[in-house]
Length: 155
Image (tube, rainbow, N blue to C red):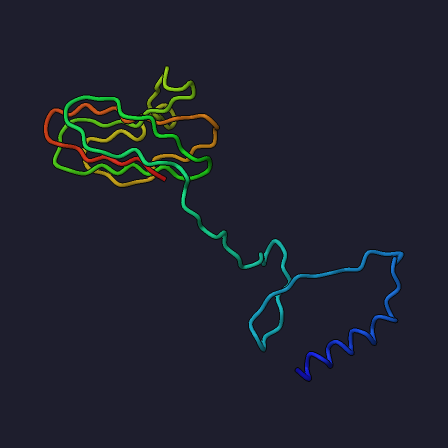
């Protein structure tokens, strides 16, 4: 409590030394460091050590079980979140992630440099894409020749 009073008194003593509005912009620097060590000035080479607090994506996962052939979806992703494709079970065939920007009227396979992307013939659990276009939707094209597929497309 005594330390707080001393700081308050010091602030009142300095108040008479500050003349506002000043004819200049006072220089302020942001620094960080551990107790007992010199402060490190925040700049491009020393960014402030923070992280974005994580929150759950608001998108509802597309999940279920499939046999045979089907187009499953839509999955409506939240923007700027990675989209995970999880495929499990004992199945044979092909599963492909499709993307639409017209409400599902046209569904196109994902590609990278013109080559197929997010096309699976075995169980997988991976990030396939991150969506940045509002209104895009995703579908799973399932063409199984045997077995049962458990699928989940989520963020």
